[in-house]
Length: 423
Image (cartoon, rainbow, N blue to C red; front, side, top):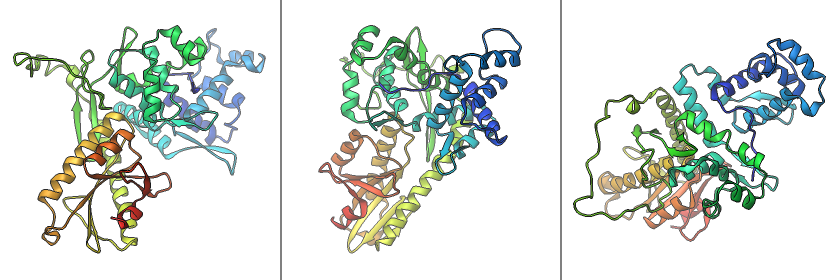
């Protein structure tokens, strides 16, 4: 099971830790030293001592302890790693120094609590964790999928988010097979100690609760009402904390009904209650960011196509490309990394390209065959690739090297232009 920092879980405290890191770096102090950053965390109130109110006296006493027993230094080491993993800090190998990233600057500049929460959620979705063998996964995305697919899951079982070697469907199925275990059987099956297992659920479930992705109650976790954000809109999506609903992964959840029990009327009695009120300030901010990202992907796609002699058209669709009788209609969608967002964006994009092809193609296209393609800002899941392929659509995504990669339907990943030229 992958190791993850577990010092603090409160996002206000974590944000203050980043502010302390920025101040330490800006002052010219050696931020990379635990005996420098640790005391600064104490002075800013992020790290607190159990005994006494005399901060400097406590720090002097701390300095006399063996290095392995200094809580401030352990906190510094764990917090530095956490802030780097979260994308708020970065280390420059050339200079050997740390710096606050643009994402970190954005967080420290945010004044509205809802925006701070939205930025933390965005950071957790992007968080990539690597083990000693080089296997990489996104534990927060896996955690959200576990909760969405299993409403009411025992919170301790969310430690499985750190067990996945990677983000593959096979790994997810492997950890699902462990859900029937109790705590001690689970840690025995995973081969980890009790302390490591309990630490594994200290941070991410708490952050997910604070930012509004899940609700924890009596040792169990449920999907929570959320604000769904995309480049083309903001919707409030309500997930009942107790009722099982079709999850984002597509796992079948059905129940037998009769003509008298099907399509029961919803309960609107709490329609005006506080629980149904959403602060959209964070969502609006993230929608702006996703819109900018969407436009950036569209421009990158257009450049890749134009260099390869495609003629380009837009409106109302994102991009229509033609070359030597070939016509490809593209719809571009950004992904935030969560399973629910991927499914919503993929289903919406499929409907859009089908509608554009039927209603909105220019007269010049006439009766010519039009290929459909949906382009994502990052690689989608295997399930989404197969869904789109079976629907007659070419799935494409922007790879880490800024190249567009296409799934060809035979299980192969190829360069987009290579695939298009072979149509």
